[in-house]
Image 1: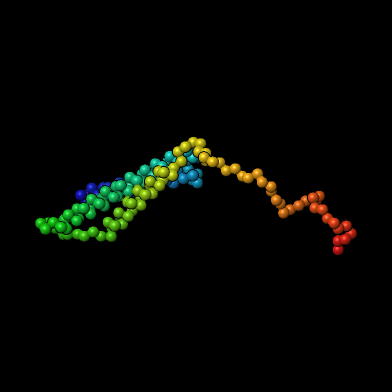
Image 2: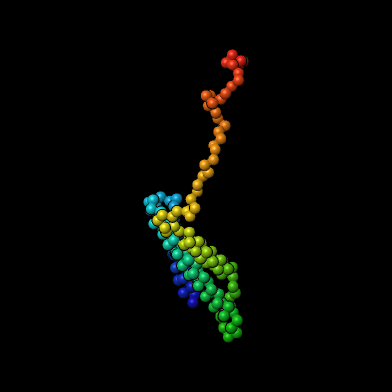
Length: 149
């Protein structure tokens, strides 16, 4: 089970790297991939899928290892060294959970529609516009031209 856990963790690192690269390419502010925002949204969503797979591989690996450690610890007939759950397992569970949550957020936030219009477009009010600056022609003065100092 140790070799399988190692293989799952290596797969998790590879999937996370691919997900990170896909997410960086799929961001709308990046120049990579051109100006096609629909394609960028799909690439970002694909990055989210890779993050979900990374989190699943991490959770399976860490949980499987913890299960076997616990099983060996409480087995009175096990002759080998008995290990306990350590901080690395808790960090693995937290990182797997965060990777799954981040992947789900990326999948749901990706833009896949071509023409996405808001349901209620903004309509500015057509009220009177007041301006502080007035033109010379509109300014009525009661003073004569010679009354200025």
